[in-house]
Image 1 (cartoon, rainbow, N blue to C red):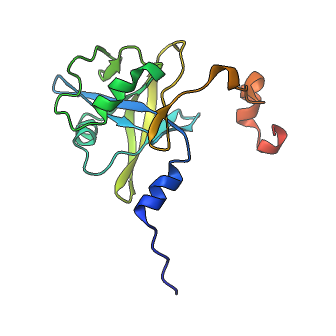
Image 2 (cartoon, rainbow, N blue to C red):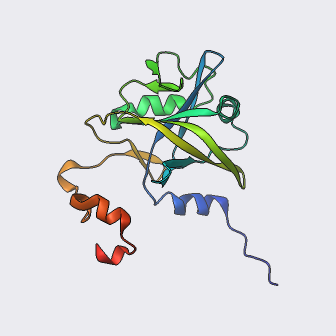
Image 3 (cartoon, rainbow, N blue to C red):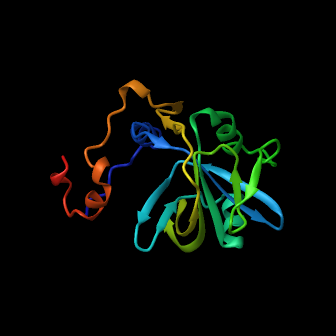
Length: 187
């Protein structure tokens, strides 16, 4: 069996940087202290049961606290929350200093002015190389707030240009789209 070609980590990172992602802050409260980290690797996983996933690095102290508590809240950031994102992406010891938050129904931290939040308990944890792949069961969600998401593309923050957005073809019939067996029906 031939050896796989080596993948240059910088090229790998730059290539994947072509994929625009939203930015979330994953939080918990551990012994009364709010803890969290900025996370791009977040996604919906299942509608039934309602599951989401995120991928923390194995060395993350914030992940260790989330694992201890068994619960977390996903805060979807708005485009004006770049400073919040930078703070939670740093090694600052108290990332919540100056950040307004309230407890979620499960007791994790909801960051004020986020577009939405999803309150979860840990469902399972899987190995993902230098990260974990964490599945969470959704227990509560917020009402949606008007605004645009904070996005990350090619190593920098970016935003949706309002005059250039186009509704997805399935938007008016989301339930039918979610239950269809083929995207070809919609494309």
